[in-house]
Image 1 (cartoon, rainbow, N blue to C red):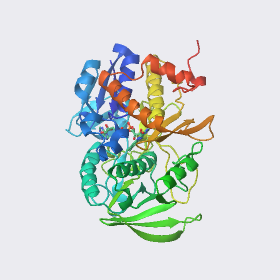
Image 2: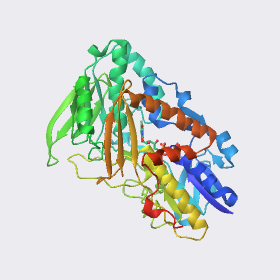
Image 3: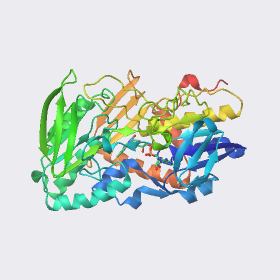
Image 4: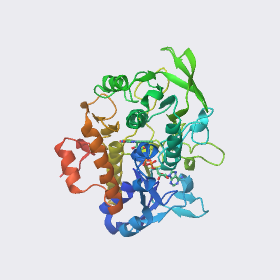
Length: 434
Ligand SMILES: Cc1cc2nc3c(=O)[nH]c(=O)nc-3n(C[C@H](O)[C@H](O)[C@H](O)COP(=O)(O)OP(=O)(O)OC[C@H]3O[C@@H](n4cnc5c(N)ncnc54)[C@H](O)[C@@H]3O)c2cc1C
């Protein structure tokens, strides 16, 4: 029987395994390999950091879910993909062969690229639920004896939404505690302007996010590189249009949080330290064609943050393109259909839309945007602000976690609602001919 392995069980990998099972029925053996028994709903991590959620509220124990769906599961983690041999080597020394491989390993967090950055050093992180849980303790200590904060996203970062969300939520939380007046906040970002988001902005994200910062007395520095993070300060250099250093300054910071740059998973790096040739780009992100398939290893697909996408435009400080939830789900649906086509002896035809539907929560308010497709130029470029965004994000968290617990990827009613809103996962021209 055809063997399909999905590596990674996050926002991309879990729905990937479910959709393959639903689409292929008993025609294939599906195995998910992660490096943890737990699914974490990553978008909730800023809430965990501020104590608004307990880690266990945003996690799902996967072995029983996969068992119920008839999907094999290992939490041993993949040490190395052997693409030429159609096999993955697990960290426990065992080896699994595959006919098709879907890589969904998310990002490796490149804290090591900046001195003092990251939860093992001087800044907190919201990127992993364990980081967020550790940061929640720091947050309580900080609130008992507050001081200046620096929040942002470093050079080469590609995920800006959570940095903005965290800054806004921090203000909400501090105001509730009535200590906002004791916490000067500076937002430091590699983006060329506030609201760029690695996407050249979406609708009026520039105006809305600048205005939200003004309302909340948050200062900002753009086109900035973080040089060093110390226990009580952050040193940053602002870069001019020509890429040259304009001004360096050391900002006092009793607490700092930065989204780091991302790299590909170490399981795509060979023992000689080089990334697997033709499978990844120089940062270890998986190269894919319009069908989410690697051009050199046509039985290897990739979904999620691990996919290589070039920047939308040159910027004074490098910024990457975010891979957001709905965009990832569109990759998942395309891959499931393309593997089904291959099993039926047809070439893949399904292209994901890469549409983005994002909800950035501020704790008491928020910004939503729809970008169709996410990479400009776009057919739809819409953004809006209001309390409803906070409520919608809470509802979405509950809904997504319920889907993971129940083992469903996209119920029919979800498909219908999104379709009625004109938001689809597969490009129309790639739909099957009747
Ligand atoms: C803090 C934060 C908040 C975000 N909020 C939003 C949001 O509100 N809306 C939105 O649209 N997007 C958001 N994103 C962006 C994106 O949706 C998430 O990053 C999402 O988790 C990416 O899904 P993924 O499957 O690619 O990676 P992940 O969800 O990180 O999953 C990767 C999985 O691979 C596993 N893995 C890694 N290496 C190995 C290995 N060697 N072997 C086996 N398994 C491995 C990991 O354990 C994990 O289970 C956010 C991102 C961050 C960091």
